[in-house]
Image 1 (cartoon, rainbow, N blue to C red):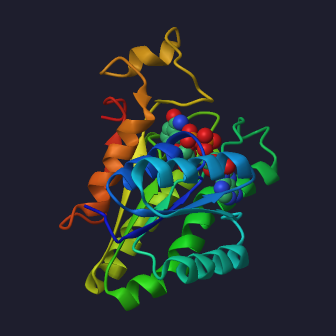
Image 2: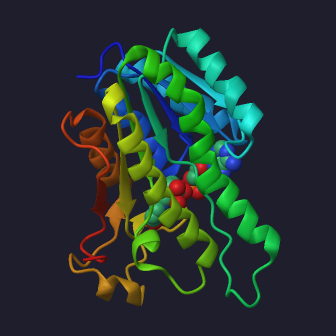
Length: 242
Ligand code: NAI
């Protein structure tokens, strides 16, 4: 389905990003993994793509919050793969705290990574997409950006901002054949969160369980190829933000 397409996945070396990489590779896409620091994790993910899914895959160390670094990285990926067709903005961080106690740097770093990082990547890929007259962008936001969450004013603001970015980019680039959508995960089981069977938050989820990284990857794969869908925010949250 995605054979011959090149997909960039930011933060693709673990967690939700890793699951997205495998899903897109399983559909035939060549993969550029952007990672922040763990080179061996990123290389292992690429090796699995090459060996198991028989696609091309390379890892690029890049801080998505850095405008110039993202510009150079996108140019390098274009030169290595020939083009870019798909961009998944998955890289994200949390620096939780109550607003009265939150340090300025914790607000700035979350906004810089989660929101400006997506802006940087979209901006640098948009020229390629416009020339190709096609492109598909999926931003990973969060139900925290829809509902708000006490102790996460920085994170919620960044993820709500990402929804505004998604819709504006979708409107601006639709006439050029480029789509931009978002997935809003709820409470997802990752290496970091684990399967918290006793967490009281689970009672608030209508479907009663945490989601799996593959649930998010399936939603991303749908949006990547959904030819008549743009500007959509698809909740994958067990119903928690209904
Ligand atoms: P994670 O912490 O396991 O993975 C995040 C990835 O982003 C890591 O590979 C990290 O190295 C990379 N990253 C962080 N800062 C970066 C930077 N400046 N430049 C390049 N890469 C950077 O997190 P997880 O859980 O897999 O989350 C992935 C996305 O899903 C994030 O955007 C997160 O906000 C979002 N999300 C996760 C939920 C969950 O329950 N796990 C719920 C809702 C949204």
